[in-house]
Amino acid sequence: MDTPTVQITSPAGIQAFNVFDTIMVKAHVSDVQGLQSVTVYVTNSQSVKVLPATRVSITSNDMTFSQPYILNDIHMASGEYYVTVSASNGTNTQYAYQKIYVDAAPTTREAVYAVTRASNSVKIWKLDSVL
Image (tube, rainbow, N blue to C red):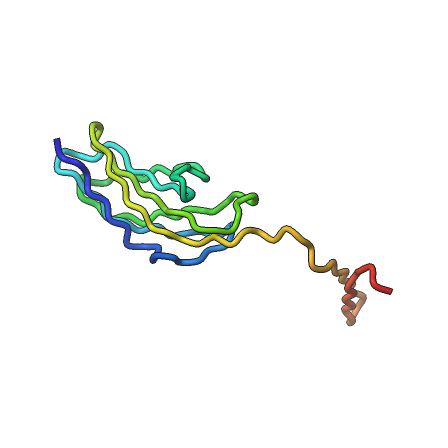
């Protein structure tokens, strides 16, 4: 039995994203025997999934798709990750990988601001511990 083919066309290699960004994953998958499943997920450099897989709707045995994928883990550390697309025909599975860089969510607060509005005036205060 043949093995599916998988080619990721987007995101571009080493593209940078922030936690909570949406990656538009574009890929071409095909299998002459018929596709049974197509999934998109993100792994770390040890090939461990760091975010849940998203299933792609199969429309044919030779298809190109665009799938939004949200980097929705606030605890995701900065570093290199891999967008992974897998395609299976029920017997064989093929994978394609695209390296990306993720910037973690900020872990320190830079400042706190207070905003008030009275009739025609708006006042903004920066609150800090400096006197």
